[in-house]
Image 1 (cartoon, helix red, strand yellow):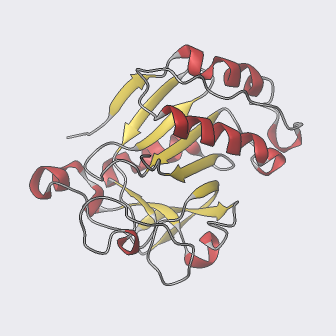
Image 2 (cartoon, rainbow, N blue to C red):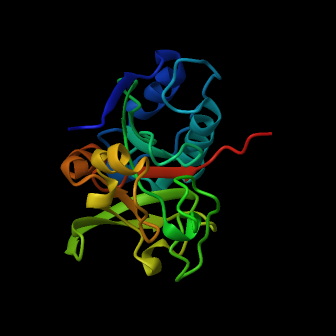
Length: 217
């Protein structure tokens, strides 16, 4: 059973971004930094509009540090782990695929299913907020995994903390069906083992993952 929510982002949300990234989508590391417009705050969007706006601003501000800007991922930790909250967004086509993703145990000590806090501290086992650059693949204790480089002060210990993307049994849809929530990682972006190849194929190396949560006023 796959817990995917394929939904189209409003073209008006991403059209400006698509025009900005289209010229550099095949240019590799040598492209000049482009200016991406803020996303209009519209409805019918699988990503919170305020969070999408933050992610696009991060994509712009990190400039040349992110070689490929045609696709991004957004982890919306405002939502509980029982909901598909890892959004793989194609900025050229305006489509998004939403998957389940676990957060760190240090971010949810009581295992409520909700991320309570972020941390960049080694040994915290918490998720970190900010922009990450997808790096190389390796095979470790969780099988095939992908290293991440933290681009902000809030997550710049990601490599040292071994914050990666990997598959995990506790991030599968069956956990939601039986427990009402996913299990917790040690701060990594853990996804279901059956969708791991899809995540790797969509992101590849040199693209951005943006993680954050919107705090209600």
